[in-house]
Image 1 (cartoon, rainbow, N blue to C red):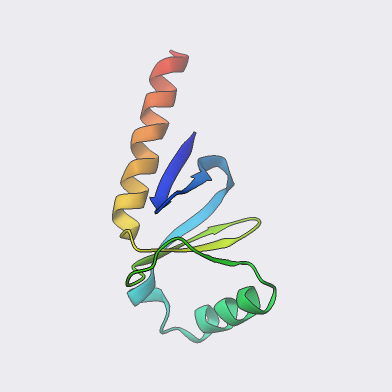
Image 2: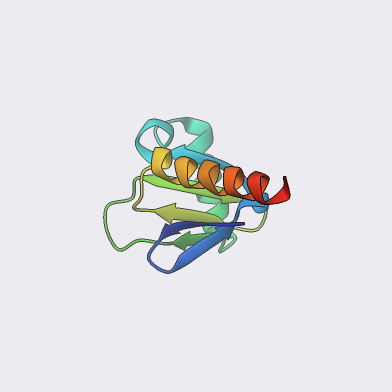
Length: 88
């Protein structure tokens, strides 16, 4: 299943490592280093033209989203529940 993370971007749920609140996480030294490394490798994708609210880490890329982390996580939960019902 796929989750919408902003604009026309969808990420495959199985590829998502984590969804994080950008305000809470970006102040940490490790997170800043992570962003620097991802940026230098060309792995940052902006899924918003507006104020970033969350970032979604996958095995391949890191997406910056204007949608809150809680909304993205809720969308992923709904998709998982739908998928589970279809399997039953």
